[in-house]
Length: 196
Image 1 (cartoon, one colour):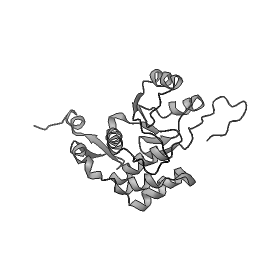
Image 2: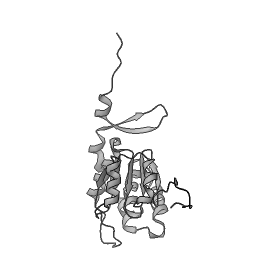
Image 3: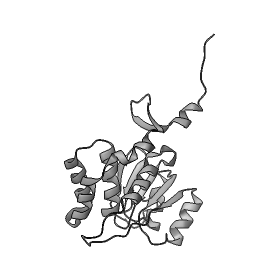
Image 4: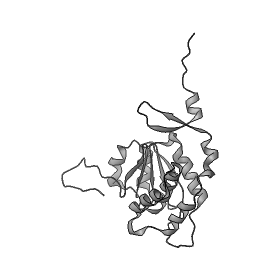
């Protein structure tokens, strides 16, 4: 949350629970109009919205005005320990996150805790994070409201289910030695220099 000072018109206020996940991937709670100026600075291409509710008109207008794509994955938020996190939905959202053509991207649900934390946790497993580190990050954002069902899902989530998606992706290292996922078709269309 941000501190609002009277007379400060250009104050940038990030959404609740905002954080950078990875270069080009951000997470937060539900943004509102107070956060729009801050979101503009991120130059977002996409938003991954994890709630089933219709996106508010004001937010939709902001996305339209800034040419930001909305990808909605309607995951019900529940405290019921007998309701499972939908694996297929998380897998589809994760595929979208892996596609750098959607970056920079913001992932959000209502509070940026459970649904967002579960998706980010699955991404961390793809990045070969140890499970204790995945849990620590999830709990840092969920606080005292961490859900055992989410943590069980993270523990059982098998990243090998995304192997087919990853076959189309290669790693490219930039001059700064930062790793970035790029689809083969993107790298094939680059001009090649040949010598005679």
